Length: 177
Image (cartoon, rainbow, N blue to C red; front, top):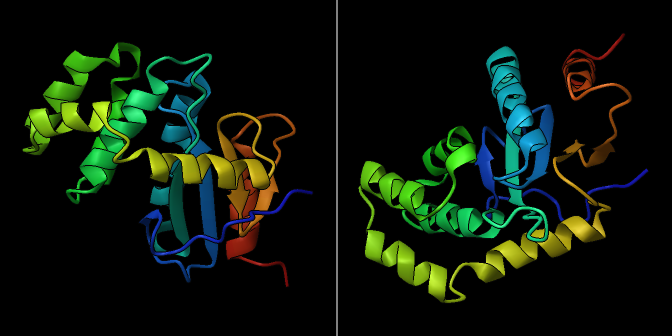
């Protein structure tokens, strides 16, 4: 079974406490339809488990199949540099069917960020290193597609659906005893 090769840290995009009973690391692509489904699931998991769950997001754009995955990741990283990662992350998934410059510019206006700065970020390697580090860490951890989840550093391989994450997290939060 694959294990997470790069431990979750304060350098990641996190919601929750890294010392929570369950740390859920997700490698995802903003244009991947399965990641969009997982986005809704993760939100439900956060509502259900609250402080017992820490969510970590890492970029894994599948550029061959999803041409807007990398630009969207750059937009999210640009927003992150201005303290707006999670609002950008959520908006990108909510706008998944329309990803492109119009959506990115509108998002910058909504977040109060510079559209020109975002366009410069698209043309320069400013945020590519962060994205590349996520991709390389994912590959070392056995990520082959998106979404890929790790629960407390162990890869999660669904048998039927991603809904199985609920049972796995529940078992980790409330150990049988």
